Length: 153
Image 1 (tube, rainbow, N blue to C red):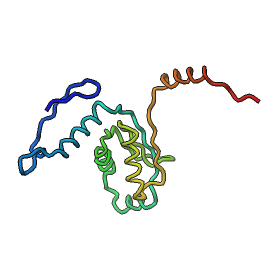
Image 2: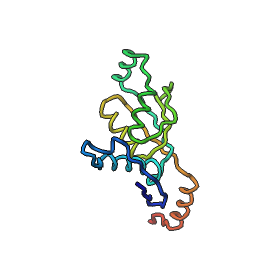
Image 3: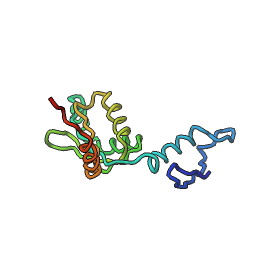
Image 4: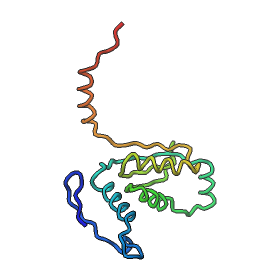
């Protein structure tokens, strides 16, 4: 099947065995999910560099003591991949934050992780920082400032 994205980029989807149900019909839901994942990760939504810092709760720290050999980076990689985020790095840190993650994805994907994992009580703090282009923001600030009238009294 051949498709074209909103930006005019042609792409192709090859049917896989799991895309066809037992009756030989196209499994529409699987196809739509595959297309949605492809579109999200490649063309429709711009990906940003995201930095996540946070602190673990006392319950999570107790888990570290109970299972000190657990590979948290592997768990974080699987979790971020489930949202479509690409994890570039994850480190346990010393200082005011217990961990830092560097990833590429959307703010919605990062919020999905914050909501999901936050609902378990594993974090005391979870902060999402999104990289921006300061020159674009400063250019927009020039335009805004040209139209700003300070309060007068």
